Image 1 (spheres, rainbow, N blue to C red):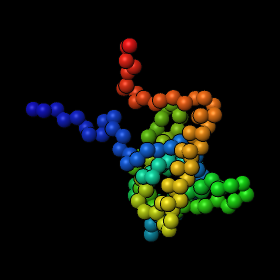
Image 2 (cartoon, rainbow, N blue to C red):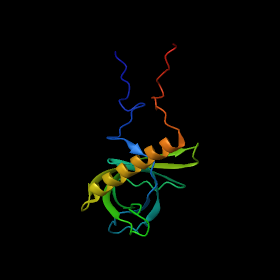
Image 3 (cartoon, rainbow, N blue to C red):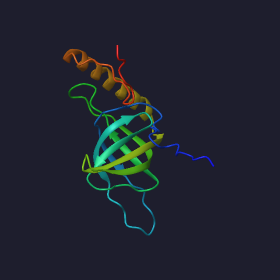
Image 4 (cartoon, helix red, strand yellow):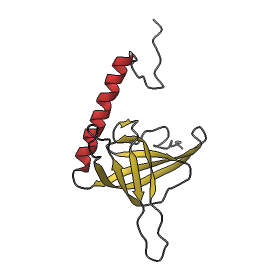
Length: 154
């Protein structure tokens, strides 16, 4: 009898890379007939990618099913208005982190409204370029190795 290891153990299920980018967001829960309306949640993203995001919150805001997210992108230049992205997302997990002392909630994007997907891609590309410039200016350019990588003993 073969022992089957879970396919999710130590696996990163993200469809694409994520950037540590803090954007303001509002999470709007669906209204259900006969149930009290749940208040809108406001917070910030912890990391963000084209397939989803994560947030860190003091209390568990997880709800099975879809929610609507409104993300506020940083202004393109000083004094410019913020652009908003509206996307339907599904909460995928809620984990309590003793290290953070908070809940980490994962959301996967399902459907962008309007040109939201293109705006998000542009914002992520811009954040990546800024990160590269800041690293070069500070002299902290270094290769990031996977945790299981080991240096060669030469």
